[in-house]
Amino acid sequence: MRLRVDATHIARPTAGLALFAAGLLGACTSDLDAPDAYSEPSITAGNDTAGDLELDCDAFPEGAVDADYDHTPDISAMDDGSRTWMAETLPDGLEISERSGRITGTPTTAGTTSVEFTVMDSTGMASTTCDIVINEGLDVDQALAIDEVPFCLRPGEETLLDLVVDGTGDGTAIRCDSDGGTGNGRRPAGISVNAETCAIEGSITEDRFGTWVFIVRGTQSGAEVFVPYCVTNDQPDGYDVSVDHSGLSDGGVDSTLVPIFRTFNPGAALAVGEDDDPLFTITSPADCGASCFFGFAFNINASPFDADTFSITNSMISSGAGGPDGFTHGLSIGGPQVDEAFQDRPWTVNIALDYCLADTDGPCEGADNVRANGDGGIEVSILMVPE
Image (tube, rainbow, N blue to C red; front, side, top):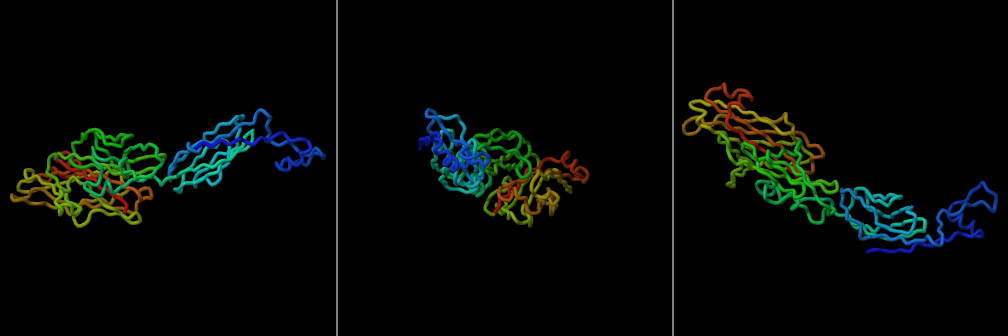
Protein backbone atom coordinates (compact mmCIF):
# COMPACT_ATOMS: atom_id res chain seq x y z
CA MET A 1 0.00 0.00 0.00
CA ARG A 2 1.33 3.45 -0.87
CA LEU A 3 -0.40 6.34 0.84
CA ARG A 4 -0.14 9.79 -0.71
CA VAL A 5 -1.02 12.70 1.54
CA ASP A 6 -1.20 16.31 0.36
CA ALA A 7 0.64 18.49 2.85
CA THR A 8 -1.30 21.27 4.49
CA HIS A 9 -0.55 24.59 2.84
CA ILE A 10 0.33 27.27 5.39
CA ALA A 11 0.21 30.84 4.07
CA ARG A 12 2.26 33.55 5.68
CA PRO A 13 0.04 35.23 8.35
CA THR A 14 -1.00 38.85 8.05
CA ALA A 15 -0.11 41.42 10.68
CA GLY A 16 -3.65 41.32 12.04
CA LEU A 17 -3.28 37.58 12.85
CA ALA A 18 0.23 37.75 14.18
CA LEU A 19 -0.64 37.56 17.87
CA PHE A 20 -2.96 34.55 17.35
CA ALA A 21 -0.41 32.65 15.25
CA ALA A 22 2.40 33.42 17.62
CA GLY A 23 0.43 32.13 20.60
CA LEU A 24 -0.46 28.95 18.71
CA LEU A 25 3.17 28.25 17.94
CA GLY A 26 4.53 29.22 21.34
CA ALA A 27 6.73 31.92 19.87
CA CYS A 28 5.89 34.89 22.11
CA THR A 29 8.71 36.98 23.53
CA SER A 30 8.80 39.39 26.48
CA ASP A 31 11.49 41.83 25.44
CA LEU A 32 9.52 43.80 22.84
CA ASP A 33 6.77 46.39 23.25
CA ALA A 34 3.32 45.61 21.89
CA PRO A 35 2.30 45.28 19.15
CA ASP A 36 5.76 43.91 18.15
CA ALA A 37 5.96 41.17 20.86
CA TYR A 38 5.90 38.20 18.50
CA SER A 39 8.11 36.29 16.12
CA GLU A 40 7.10 34.74 12.82
CA PRO A 41 5.97 31.08 12.70
CA SER A 42 8.80 28.64 12.06
CA ILE A 43 6.74 26.69 9.49
CA THR A 44 6.10 28.83 6.43
CA ALA A 45 5.84 28.25 2.74
CA GLY A 46 5.57 30.41 -0.32
CA ASN A 47 2.91 29.77 -2.91
CA ASP A 48 5.28 27.75 -5.13
CA THR A 49 7.06 25.51 -2.55
CA ALA A 50 4.26 23.48 -0.97
CA GLY A 51 4.82 19.75 -1.79
CA ASP A 52 3.35 16.28 -1.25
CA LEU A 53 4.57 13.77 1.36
CA GLU A 54 4.42 10.06 0.48
CA LEU A 55 5.17 7.07 2.77
CA ASP A 56 5.56 3.50 1.44
CA CYS A 57 4.03 1.18 4.04
CA ASP A 58 4.70 -1.95 1.94
CA ALA A 59 8.45 -1.34 2.18
CA PHE A 60 8.61 -2.01 5.93
CA PRO A 61 10.47 -5.33 6.47
CA GLU A 62 9.34 -7.96 8.94
CA GLY A 63 11.32 -8.10 12.16
CA ALA A 64 11.82 -10.80 14.79
CA VAL A 65 12.28 -10.96 18.53
CA ASP A 66 15.98 -10.61 19.47
CA ALA A 67 16.93 -9.74 15.87
CA ASP A 68 18.43 -6.40 14.86
CA TYR A 69 15.92 -4.17 13.05
CA ASP A 70 17.03 -1.33 10.78
CA HIS A 71 14.80 0.47 8.29
CA THR A 72 14.53 4.00 6.99
CA PRO A 73 11.07 4.68 5.51
CA ASP A 74 10.97 5.58 1.84
CA ILE A 75 9.55 9.08 1.52
CA SER A 76 9.57 11.71 -1.18
CA ALA A 77 8.56 15.37 -1.05
CA MET A 78 8.93 18.63 -2.94
CA ASP A 79 10.79 20.37 -0.13
CA ASP A 80 14.28 21.23 0.97
CA GLY A 81 14.87 17.83 2.64
CA SER A 82 14.59 19.09 6.23
CA ARG A 83 12.08 16.93 8.12
CA THR A 84 11.05 16.01 11.64
CA TRP A 85 9.74 12.48 12.30
CA MET A 86 7.46 11.17 15.02
CA ALA A 87 6.01 7.69 15.54
CA GLU A 88 3.29 6.55 17.93
CA THR A 89 3.30 3.02 19.44
CA LEU A 90 6.41 1.55 17.84
CA PRO A 91 6.94 -2.14 18.72
CA ASP A 92 8.76 -2.67 22.02
CA GLY A 93 12.50 -2.38 21.57
CA LEU A 94 12.39 -0.06 18.54
CA GLU A 95 13.01 3.69 18.30
CA ILE A 96 12.88 6.27 15.53
CA SER A 97 15.37 8.98 14.68
CA GLU A 98 13.56 12.30 14.80
CA ARG A 99 15.88 13.69 12.17
CA SER A 100 16.18 10.87 9.63
CA GLY A 101 13.18 8.64 10.34
CA ARG A 102 15.49 5.63 10.66
CA ILE A 103 13.91 2.90 12.82
CA THR A 104 16.37 0.73 14.75
CA GLY A 105 16.57 -1.57 17.76
CA THR A 106 15.93 -5.15 18.84
CA PRO A 107 12.27 -6.12 19.19
CA THR A 108 11.27 -7.86 22.40
CA THR A 109 7.66 -8.87 21.63
CA ALA A 110 6.14 -10.65 18.65
CA GLY A 111 3.03 -9.30 16.94
CA THR A 112 1.69 -6.77 14.43
CA THR A 113 1.70 -3.12 15.53
CA SER A 114 -0.11 -0.27 13.79
CA VAL A 115 2.20 2.72 13.96
CA GLU A 116 1.11 6.30 13.21
CA PHE A 117 3.92 8.22 11.54
CA THR A 118 3.92 12.00 11.41
CA VAL A 119 6.33 13.97 9.25
CA MET A 120 6.84 17.73 9.38
CA ASP A 121 8.86 19.59 6.78
CA SER A 122 9.09 23.04 5.30
CA THR A 123 5.79 22.55 3.46
CA GLY A 124 3.70 21.40 6.38
CA MET A 125 2.76 18.19 8.19
CA ALA A 126 1.30 14.82 7.17
CA SER A 127 0.42 11.62 9.04
CA THR A 128 -0.35 8.05 8.07
CA THR A 129 -0.48 4.62 9.69
CA CYS A 130 1.64 1.59 8.73
CA ASP A 131 1.78 -1.93 10.17
CA ILE A 132 5.10 -3.33 11.45
CA VAL A 133 5.22 -7.14 11.79
CA ILE A 134 7.50 -8.72 14.40
CA ASN A 135 7.83 -12.53 14.24
CA GLU A 136 8.87 -14.93 16.97
CA GLY A 137 12.62 -15.15 17.43
CA LEU A 138 14.64 -17.39 15.15
CA ASP A 139 14.34 -20.99 16.36
CA VAL A 140 15.33 -24.48 15.24
CA ASP A 141 13.68 -27.81 16.01
CA GLN A 142 16.45 -29.60 17.89
CA ALA A 143 14.39 -32.79 18.04
CA LEU A 144 14.93 -33.30 14.31
CA ALA A 145 18.66 -33.54 15.01
CA ILE A 146 18.90 -35.33 18.34
CA ASP A 147 15.93 -37.67 18.66
CA GLU A 148 17.61 -40.53 16.78
CA VAL A 149 21.08 -42.07 16.65
CA PRO A 150 23.60 -40.53 16.12
CA PHE A 151 22.00 -37.41 17.72
CA CYS A 152 23.66 -35.00 15.27
CA LEU A 153 23.52 -33.97 11.59
CA ARG A 154 25.85 -35.87 9.28
CA PRO A 155 27.32 -35.08 5.84
CA GLY A 156 24.81 -35.31 3.00
CA GLU A 157 21.82 -35.11 5.32
CA GLU A 158 19.68 -32.21 6.56
CA THR A 159 21.33 -28.95 7.55
CA LEU A 160 20.59 -26.27 10.10
CA LEU A 161 18.45 -24.51 7.49
CA ASP A 162 16.11 -27.52 7.31
CA LEU A 163 15.48 -27.29 11.06
CA VAL A 164 14.30 -23.65 11.19
CA VAL A 165 10.82 -23.47 12.71
CA ASP A 166 8.25 -21.95 10.33
CA GLY A 167 7.22 -18.42 11.23
CA THR A 168 10.34 -17.64 13.24
CA GLY A 169 13.04 -15.16 12.32
CA ASP A 170 12.85 -12.12 10.07
CA GLY A 171 13.16 -13.95 6.75
CA THR A 172 16.61 -12.67 5.85
CA ALA A 173 19.50 -14.98 4.95
CA ILE A 174 20.97 -17.22 7.66
CA ARG A 175 24.74 -17.66 7.65
CA CYS A 176 26.50 -20.57 9.32
CA ASP A 177 29.88 -20.96 10.99
CA SER A 178 31.64 -23.52 13.18
CA ASP A 179 34.56 -21.76 14.77
CA GLY A 180 35.05 -24.28 17.56
CA GLY A 181 36.30 -23.40 21.03
CA THR A 182 34.65 -23.72 24.41
CA GLY A 183 31.45 -25.71 24.12
CA ASN A 184 31.54 -25.83 20.31
CA GLY A 185 33.91 -28.78 19.87
CA ARG A 186 36.12 -28.92 16.83
CA ARG A 187 35.80 -30.02 13.23
CA PRO A 188 38.11 -32.84 12.15
CA ALA A 189 40.80 -32.04 9.60
CA GLY A 190 39.51 -31.80 6.03
CA ILE A 191 35.98 -30.80 7.04
CA SER A 192 34.34 -27.37 6.66
CA VAL A 193 30.82 -25.91 6.78
CA ASN A 194 29.47 -23.82 3.91
CA ALA A 195 28.47 -20.41 5.24
CA GLU A 196 25.49 -20.05 2.88
CA THR A 197 24.10 -23.59 2.58
CA CYS A 198 25.13 -24.66 6.12
CA ALA A 199 26.14 -28.05 4.64
CA ILE A 200 29.18 -30.10 5.62
CA GLU A 201 31.84 -30.05 2.91
CA GLY A 202 35.12 -31.88 2.33
CA SER A 203 36.45 -35.29 3.36
CA ILE A 204 37.86 -36.22 6.74
CA THR A 205 41.64 -36.56 6.72
CA GLU A 206 42.09 -37.58 10.37
CA ASP A 207 43.83 -40.87 11.06
CA ARG A 208 42.15 -41.25 14.41
CA PHE A 209 39.21 -43.60 14.81
CA GLY A 210 36.01 -42.11 16.21
CA THR A 211 33.35 -39.41 15.90
CA TRP A 212 33.82 -35.65 16.16
CA VAL A 213 30.82 -33.57 17.26
CA PHE A 214 30.96 -29.84 16.59
CA ILE A 215 28.34 -27.14 17.00
CA VAL A 216 27.25 -25.10 13.98
CA ARG A 217 25.94 -21.62 14.67
CA GLY A 218 23.31 -19.99 12.45
CA THR A 219 23.15 -16.18 12.55
CA GLN A 220 20.32 -13.99 11.23
CA SER A 221 20.27 -10.24 11.91
CA GLY A 222 22.30 -10.81 15.07
CA ALA A 223 20.07 -13.63 16.41
CA GLU A 224 21.76 -17.02 16.92
CA VAL A 225 20.77 -20.69 16.90
CA PHE A 226 22.98 -23.74 17.51
CA VAL A 227 22.78 -27.27 16.06
CA PRO A 228 25.09 -30.30 16.61
CA TYR A 229 26.85 -31.73 13.55
CA CYS A 230 29.16 -34.74 13.45
CA VAL A 231 31.65 -36.55 11.21
CA THR A 232 33.01 -40.09 11.70
CA ASN A 233 36.16 -41.93 10.75
CA ASP A 234 35.06 -45.55 10.93
CA GLN A 235 38.42 -47.12 9.99
CA PRO A 236 40.10 -48.59 13.10
CA ASP A 237 43.79 -47.89 13.51
CA GLY A 238 45.64 -50.48 15.59
CA TYR A 239 43.92 -51.80 18.68
CA ASP A 240 40.34 -53.03 18.64
CA VAL A 241 38.45 -50.33 20.58
CA SER A 242 34.75 -50.47 21.44
CA VAL A 243 32.50 -48.30 23.60
CA ASP A 244 29.24 -49.39 25.20
CA HIS A 245 27.06 -46.56 26.56
CA SER A 246 23.54 -45.25 27.10
CA GLY A 247 21.97 -48.72 26.92
CA LEU A 248 22.21 -48.69 23.13
CA SER A 249 23.62 -52.21 22.99
CA ASP A 250 20.41 -53.49 24.61
CA GLY A 251 18.66 -52.47 21.42
CA GLY A 252 21.29 -54.05 19.20
CA VAL A 253 23.08 -50.77 18.40
CA ASP A 254 26.87 -50.64 18.32
CA SER A 255 27.49 -47.41 20.24
CA THR A 256 31.24 -47.21 19.62
CA LEU A 257 30.93 -44.40 17.07
CA VAL A 258 27.81 -42.81 18.58
CA PRO A 259 28.36 -39.63 20.62
CA ILE A 260 27.61 -39.90 24.32
CA PHE A 261 24.33 -37.97 24.48
CA ARG A 262 22.92 -36.49 27.68
CA THR A 263 20.32 -33.89 28.61
CA PHE A 264 21.08 -31.54 31.48
CA ASN A 265 19.28 -29.34 33.95
CA PRO A 266 20.51 -25.78 33.28
CA GLY A 267 20.27 -24.95 36.98
CA ALA A 268 22.13 -27.98 38.33
CA ALA A 269 25.66 -29.37 38.46
CA LEU A 270 26.81 -31.60 35.59
CA ALA A 271 28.01 -35.19 35.62
CA VAL A 272 28.53 -37.87 32.97
CA GLY A 273 29.84 -41.36 33.64
CA GLU A 274 28.33 -43.67 36.22
CA ASP A 275 28.22 -47.44 36.77
CA ASP A 276 30.61 -48.05 33.86
CA ASP A 277 28.41 -46.13 31.45
CA PRO A 278 30.31 -45.57 29.20
CA LEU A 279 32.47 -48.69 29.24
CA PHE A 280 35.55 -48.79 26.97
CA THR A 281 37.16 -52.08 25.90
CA ILE A 282 40.62 -52.13 24.31
CA THR A 283 41.98 -55.47 23.06
CA SER A 284 45.14 -56.67 21.34
CA PRO A 285 46.11 -60.25 22.38
CA ALA A 286 49.33 -60.10 20.38
CA ASP A 287 50.65 -57.25 22.51
CA CYS A 288 49.82 -58.79 25.88
CA GLY A 289 51.29 -62.30 25.80
CA ALA A 290 51.45 -64.19 29.09
CA SER A 291 51.07 -60.93 31.01
CA CYS A 292 49.63 -57.55 30.10
CA PHE A 293 50.44 -53.99 31.04
CA PHE A 294 48.52 -51.00 29.82
CA GLY A 295 48.58 -47.24 29.86
CA PHE A 296 46.39 -44.43 28.56
CA ALA A 297 46.58 -40.71 27.86
CA PHE A 298 43.84 -38.23 27.08
CA ASN A 299 43.32 -34.73 25.80
CA ILE A 300 40.11 -32.73 26.38
CA ASN A 301 38.86 -29.99 24.09
CA ALA A 302 37.74 -26.78 25.82
CA SER A 303 34.22 -27.11 27.22
CA PRO A 304 31.92 -25.91 30.01
CA PHE A 305 32.77 -29.09 31.91
CA ASP A 306 35.34 -28.77 34.68
CA ALA A 307 38.31 -30.61 33.15
CA ASP A 308 39.83 -31.08 36.62
CA THR A 309 37.10 -33.59 37.38
CA PHE A 310 37.79 -35.78 34.33
CA SER A 311 39.10 -39.22 35.15
CA ILE A 312 39.46 -42.73 33.75
CA THR A 313 37.62 -45.03 36.16
CA ASN A 314 37.66 -48.74 37.04
CA SER A 315 40.48 -49.66 34.66
CA MET A 316 41.36 -53.34 34.77
CA ILE A 317 42.91 -56.12 32.71
CA SER A 318 40.53 -58.15 30.57
CA SER A 319 41.07 -61.76 29.58
CA GLY A 320 40.16 -63.83 26.55
CA ALA A 321 40.33 -67.56 25.92
CA GLY A 322 44.12 -67.49 25.70
CA GLY A 323 44.80 -65.22 28.67
CA PRO A 324 45.11 -61.44 29.06
CA ASP A 325 44.10 -59.61 25.90
CA GLY A 326 43.68 -55.95 26.89
CA PHE A 327 41.83 -53.82 29.40
CA THR A 328 38.58 -52.01 30.12
CA HIS A 329 37.83 -48.65 31.71
CA GLY A 330 35.06 -46.21 32.45
CA LEU A 331 34.99 -42.43 32.19
CA SER A 332 33.83 -39.74 34.58
CA ILE A 333 33.60 -36.02 33.93
CA GLY A 334 31.64 -33.29 35.68
CA GLY A 335 31.39 -29.69 36.70
CA PRO A 336 29.22 -27.03 38.29
CA GLN A 337 26.16 -25.39 36.73
CA VAL A 338 27.12 -24.06 33.31
CA ASP A 339 27.36 -20.36 32.55
CA GLU A 340 24.26 -18.59 31.29
CA ALA A 341 25.59 -18.60 27.70
CA PHE A 342 25.28 -22.42 27.57
CA GLN A 343 22.05 -22.96 29.49
CA ASP A 344 19.65 -22.84 26.55
CA ARG A 345 21.72 -24.35 23.74
CA PRO A 346 23.49 -27.63 22.87
CA TRP A 347 27.21 -27.87 23.51
CA THR A 348 29.87 -30.52 23.26
CA VAL A 349 33.26 -31.67 24.50
CA ASN A 350 35.72 -33.77 22.49
CA ILE A 351 38.01 -36.27 24.24
CA ALA A 352 40.98 -37.85 22.46
CA LEU A 353 42.06 -41.12 24.12
CA ASP A 354 45.35 -42.88 23.34
CA TYR A 355 46.22 -46.39 24.52
CA CYS A 356 49.26 -48.59 25.01
CA LEU A 357 49.43 -52.36 25.58
CA ALA A 358 52.61 -54.34 26.23
CA ASP A 359 53.84 -57.51 27.93
CA THR A 360 56.18 -55.45 30.16
CA ASP A 361 55.45 -52.36 32.19
CA GLY A 362 58.10 -49.97 30.77
CA PRO A 363 56.71 -49.08 27.31
CA CYS A 364 53.36 -47.84 28.63
CA GLU A 365 54.50 -45.71 31.57
CA GLY A 366 53.61 -42.04 31.23
CA ALA A 367 51.63 -40.14 28.60
CA ASP A 368 54.63 -39.60 26.31
CA ASN A 369 55.41 -43.32 26.22
CA VAL A 370 51.75 -44.16 25.66
CA ARG A 371 51.63 -41.98 22.58
CA ALA A 372 55.04 -43.10 21.33
CA ASN A 373 54.64 -46.83 21.91
CA GLY A 374 50.88 -47.33 21.68
CA ASP A 375 48.98 -48.44 18.62
CA GLY A 376 45.66 -46.67 18.50
CA GLY A 377 42.97 -44.78 20.35
CA ILE A 378 39.58 -43.23 19.83
CA GLU A 379 37.96 -39.80 19.49
CA VAL A 380 34.91 -39.56 21.75
CA SER A 381 32.41 -36.71 21.95
CA ILE A 382 29.93 -35.90 24.68
CA LEU A 383 26.88 -33.95 23.49
CA MET A 384 24.86 -32.02 26.08
CA VAL A 385 21.39 -30.61 25.36
CA PRO A 386 19.25 -28.67 27.88
CA GLU A 387 16.14 -30.42 29.16
